[in-house]
Length: 101
Length: 469
Ligand SMILES: Cc1ncc(COP(=O)(O)O)c(C=O)c1O
Image 1 (cartoon, rainbow over the protein chains, first blue to last red):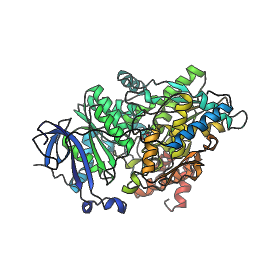
Image 2 (tube, protein in one colour):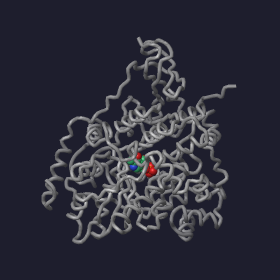
Image 3 (tube, chains in turn purple, orange):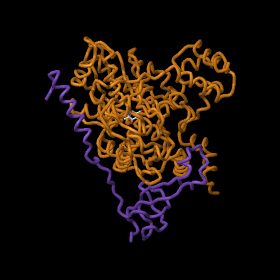
Image 4 (cartoon, rainbow over the protein chains, first blue to last red):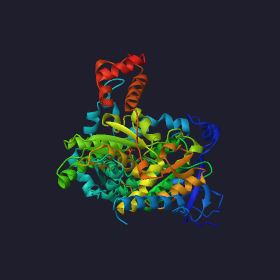
């Protein structure tokens, strides 16, 4: 359970697919327009509950509670062997003109 | 009575919301259904070069180092005709507080917002501008909300954009994230209306005037360091603000260097497509923004964009994602500077442009951007692979956006592609006249010539060919 005052992430659907009237490619038109933000919970709640949060600027925003301890997990990716190959080519090309290394 | 907040109602109030949120009435600049007074727009807000410089210096922005890329120059000369291969210099804009030239725009926008008494600022951007506005809002003491297009319909975020969200939050902003689609503007307007914040648009006159100092500094630094002016300045082009402002500053310094716009070639990918969204390996600096904004500047979040790159550009070139990725690697490996990939667009183009120029020529690349998790060659290429993109070494000419990323198998294979700038000029002229739906007057023809850096004969010929005169 998440407690009032906890920092959480919420999700909402801004426009359902059938409500999207803008000029859009078909693949996008078939999807809901979804939105996420973060803030402090205004009351105790469980994941999946409809809640209101107070965002960092003090705005009240409603949505579904999806994460009670949000964090970033983007990183430097996995091994990409092509980059090692490129580095080798660059070193060799420089060596040929008496460059560094 | 509470205002209706459904899509149609909010979009219907768009003009009023924008006027309220900018503190600027664009009607006073309109001179005909086609033309407006660009110079008046740029000077009306009082941001002269000196004033912009004063504001930026106060908040830690600008006066970034101009670095000579000695090893990259040496390597470029290896593939050039004897006696060719200009000296390449890089303006290290990553040295700005939030890590890109966008701080120049944000410093002025946030300063203006504060001067007008707004409590907070908002910006709709998935790019470096979000971090810049968040940073300047922190420095100048305003609240900040950034709205970004970040995820596809499976909730998968573009690593570069996710990193920018992290950075905005780290700098104290609220970040509202959305899935793909132009209706982001609805969420943006709706929050703008509720909060009464200032729209720190990328395209306001103060935002663009903020970039003027970049071009001016480039010329001053060349004169101090080298005792001469640059011969060519290469600018990454997306919404066109970098190219417009840099060129304006170069001209203000009294320098007539050739201005080259450079974009990453993403032709064939739809910018509003959910499926294509995560098939790109760079989220800015590409033709998906570059071409529509150059040929129709006034479809942004302000009635008249101050970014009008065709007024200033002498040439427009494209370069591939693979070349940009390899150039980012080259900068790190050969010059010892690790920077973000999208900011290398102009440097990747410069590597082959330099080979067309004599050895004593000076070529300046107008920027770098910060790097970090997600916003880096390795995670971008790994992400591309996970999205079914073929990543390989080869000839970058064979790259197909959305299908492959081809890293040049030899640096000899770097080759910019000259875009048909006259075609873009014609496109702007046609769009402007069709949009207005009237026959252009003599002064409109002059306006369109200024808009496209051409002459009245060129404008007339374009219109006659298309039955618009
Ligand atoms: C690092 C960097 N370079 C260049 C650009 C292009 O600038 P503009 O949109 O003004 O053309 C952007 C922004 O889109 C950027 O973030």
